[in-house]
Length: 361
Image 1: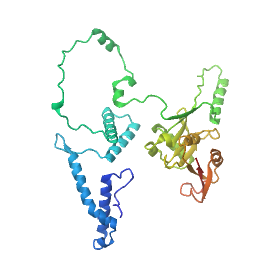
Image 2: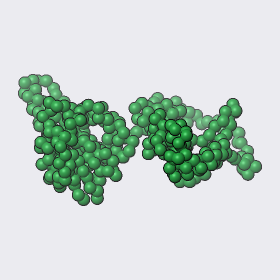
Image 3: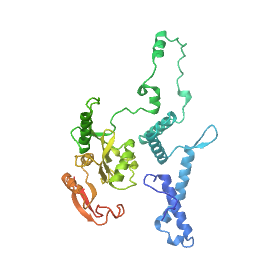
Image 4: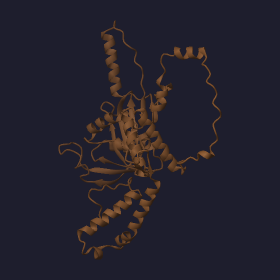
């Protein structure tokens, strides 16, 4: 049974509605190919679905009708399905990560997230209120004139910090902390850092009278992937591997377990990405030029984030990084000829062949 060519079926969209539409489209497509021989060629599963599908569609229609409501404009409204709710939250979260959402957008996103949590915990929503069961409100007291001292204090406030303002409660406040911090390294000194130090010292010797700001030591921070890292990560992977590598999908899965980004200040100097916590396959390992042989420990921290799981990767046959992987305990399991033929240029010095390595835990 084949689905319609215009229908996209993914694991995330396989709710009951999508499953019923999938079966119906497959049966209609199979029957329309050869109506005369369709009953003879139909399998047992297709015959069974033909008998069950009308009843399932009728039940789905009844459930949707029972959940539907009309608004003040006589427009028929129905609640979002689980898939539609997750898709709306995913789209709104991705849009909010790029630009600051408006108060209305932030409110809608919080309401959608609250509805999803209620469904997960089986909390029944209060659709209708029996006003007869509500207690009457206490009599309203006459308004009291505000004290002059309070008004003077309020008038003396010129500005309110954003993190303490009402706007931050509507739009959300992100404190300036290291989100997804994995480790901090104050010891590592790369050739690039030594070069910058020499440049500063040479300038101070050449211009002894000019004032220079003191050099502030900056550590190497290992953090999980954030939306602000994507541009530098894509540029680094394009220089080390090839164009077209996109790490945006990793933000939607588990970046705290599948990614380690080495940061020197605001510069991305190292990247280690895992396909998923379930598969535990290292897709990309890259280090910025000038930071090689500096013990940038992105691979080490990525392994530590996924304990008790075997981790695999592929490495080119002539890549000296094979020695580094052996230190971590990776062992060659398979030699694959022409593994990188579809990715590397024919004039590339890197080998087209690869070893498949595994770290057994």
